[in-house]
Image 1 (cartoon, helix red, strand yellow):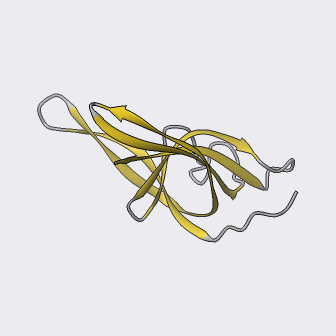
Image 2: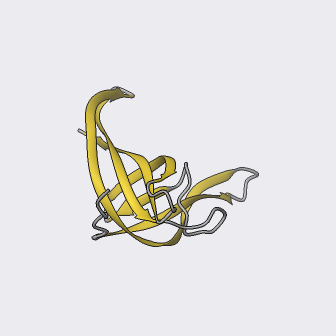
Image 3: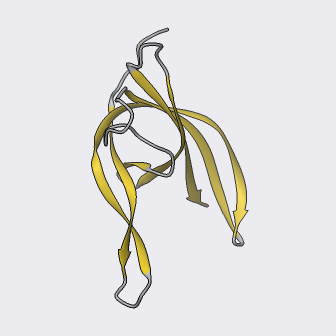
Length: 112
């Protein structure tokens, strides 16, 4: 297995619910930190999302390993951001047998 080229700085974000002052809430995102990553695109497809065509592409994003429970370890339902691009994390698995690297299986959606 070749070593990944961690050459992209991505911002790891987690969802956060904030009171809207009327008994409800709004969902925002808090920054957990910056992770260096290797991004590899998978297959893509176009779908109709509420009447508008949407391009959806799967990605394998490799980052350095981190122990379970630490803020540096990505989790499903979090996201990685690179400028205006947003990668929603669907699953995370160890890439290396010793846990040196993690693979985040993520999706990017873009309105066409």
